[in-house]
Length: 136
Image (cartoon, rainbow, N blue to C red; front, top):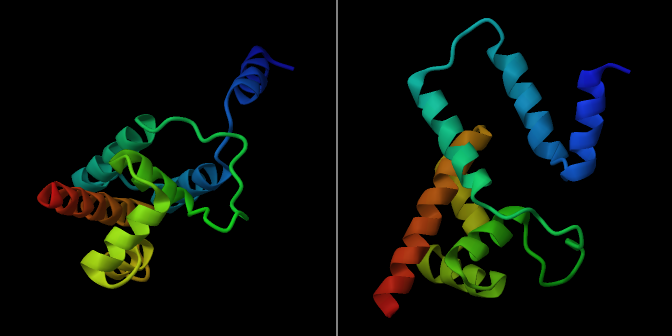
């Protein structure tokens, strides 16, 4: 075992690995093999990484089977807004007559990249935040 693999094993023990994110990064790397990223792609990637870096780690006790549990994106959006998932869902219905996830998919498009969906979600969270401030 090399020193590098020993470091990797230690890193995996210290942090929870997001396998979906890791798979998406590998897919994106394969897709981009041989070409440079555009400025817009780099800006999207930086924005996504910045958002992810500001979120606290997901608790190991997350139970998606629970009736009131939301998706990871819903949990993160609710956490950013300081509201419950139920409140987030109600605000989305009030604003767009559909769920936040449905609206995000509609705006990002059917064949959208994770970066595009992330950008759409950030815009939706800002719109929800704006509607919350109007009410106050």
